[in-house]
Amino acid sequence: MAYRSGELRLDDPDAGRLRVSGDGYAAAGELVTLIVSPDVHRFLSMSDDEVAEASAIDRRYREALRRVYSGGQWRPPHVDPAAAPAREEVAHAVGRLLGDERTSRLHRLSWRIQGGDALLDDGVPDVLQLTAEQRRQVETVAEENEREYARVLAQVDAVRGRQAARTSDPELVAVRARRAHDAGRARLLALLTVEQRARFAQLSTGGG
Image (cartoon, rainbow, N blue to C red; front, side):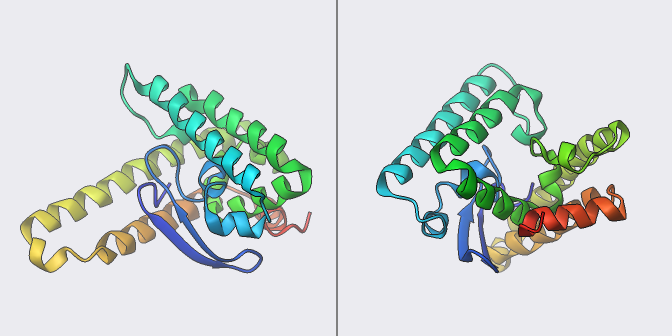
């Protein structure tokens, strides 16, 4: 998932101007990154107490992942079965915090931001009725996307090392990460049928 370690800024038709940060725990656009964004707080009209609880959800999630990876190699959480319980707990906690209507709005926002990456979210494959083969392909392509994203970042670091004075502009990372991000999303969405893509578009815009 792109923008795993950076800030994503976008103009959303429903939420307005959004700033969301991602890191090695979760990419920008996942529920746990959205609930700690001040822009999302305003979008959902969250109270001070709800904002505090959102921070606690984020903290518990990070603590859980630190335990998961304390004795082994890090893997992208969204493709690592060992991280699934922590991700599922975030979804349940967000639902309890926000209630059905606002949770639904948050999910739609998340899916719009994530695009094809949303196929890795719990429930989306079921709603879209992905076949067993499609689910296998989603997992395979997601792993390939992560490797490609890591390769792009490694190339950027190598270029910076050779030409630090000329390539220190942070836009270098943003542009190349965005390209890798968009290409990865496209590869995932290409796994869907025409009908499934239309259904996903309805889900992310609240049309169904």
